[in-house]
Length: 107
Image (cartoon, rainbow, N blue to C red; front, side, top):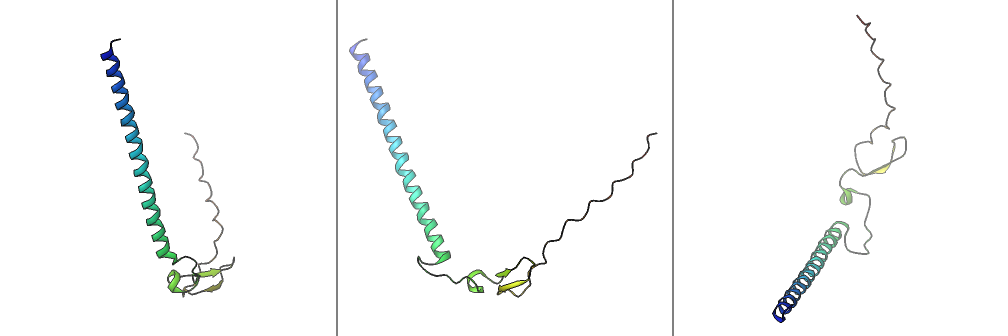
């Protein structure tokens, strides 16, 4: 192979390596920037919902969860809560399936 051919191959390989390194670096830095941005947005959203860190939120009361917080026992009786409507009745058992239809006799 001539010197010119080896020089062309070396230049091609050098350009390919440079392009791959640039693409990998751009991917890495843009990925980290997007992840950090998303983490910041999620932290701000969570902080606006639950309050500042180390705060002791009040669990019951309409100011915390709207009108409708109730605690009920297994029978459906309200034990504690702020809502004005009662808890729904406990679930009933499923109805029995209907009786099968009579079969017609072959003709």
